[in-house]
Image (cartoon, rainbow, N blue to C red; front, side):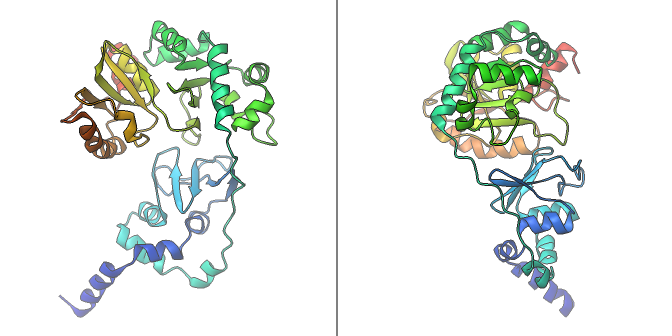
Length: 352
């Protein structure tokens, strides 16, 4: 081995990732290397360009990438990380190679960089938010026709949708944004929505008025607002309000439990005929160990998405569940061609 190669190997082994992160702001990377323009939002900076080459740039009005506390996340492709992970993804290099490349960035340029500042984060009133969800559940005892048709297109029968609505899990606002705004003003009121963080100061309408499909957590302290259609790659798929909390569906037994990723998969599991009680996580990595405190001795089966994120999340979740259960847990195997329970359901019904 040559002397030069030995020095190069030494340099690669000695790169200090924390030093690189401190030297190179992630916002600088998005602006100077990806060509993104910062958009100031409440508590975060957003960009329309993603370091994932397969995701890349979207329209200038897109706000698909959020940057906060030196971390970034793309809501279109779900890639996320720090500045080194962004560079490695963009350049197609290893983390070490990307870190070494970033170390070589011009110090004068970095020192003269003025980092964009996000708008002050809205201080949410959790009591007001819980009141909003309580009023919505009371005001929407039946799903809309558009809501029934959309979920039916995903394989979820009208009967299941109506039952979920009666349980206060699935709600549907008017599909027309103007009508949804008027409905929210009439049933909730501007002041309560503003205190709850649903209506931002200066906005002409709450963002929820444009996302009429609402999934409300069992504790009625959190909800997810979504489109009644497939979201586009440059759109934020859902808006979440409140604390992190799961959805739940009581089956024939409280001691036979299926854990899914999201409320659509929870409803899909019911449509597929499971007799288990179902817990839907609000994201494969969004859970709290205390949610599983009553699982001792239960027969627990997980059914997370069959993708890299789902498999990684399962490895993190498994030891926590096994400790709660007091023994091994199962992992549901999806059929070929289905990446989640909803795709399995649509396959079964010939909707794919």
